[in-house]
Length: 114
Image 1 (spheres, one colour):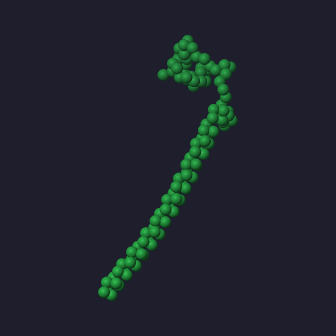
Image 2 (cartoon, one colour; image 1 turned 90 degrees about the vertical axis):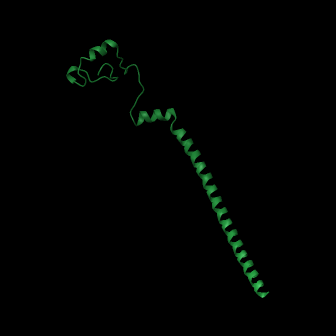
Image 3 (cartoon, helix red, strand yellow; image 1 turned 45 degrees about the vertical axis):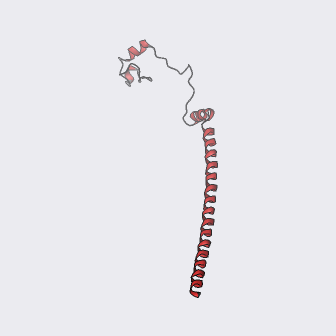
């Protein structure tokens, strides 16, 4: 009988230790899950902030301002626009593109030049 009591006592102690271990592991996993959820929320907020910044950076007025400032681009006006008509294209095909002596520096559109 005492031997049975000793076996049962060992079984109760083993199950108690197992229960403590399971509870500890459960708490550790819950903590890790909570940290992962917090990180996911933080990343979602960062994603939304970056999307707003991206939209702000791509506004037409900002793009135009940067084109003028950094690329030295300017809007096209009739004063700087070169119009090409069919007669001048036919005459330009006989000229050598890039030849400074012929007065032809190349065609901007490349029309009529093979």
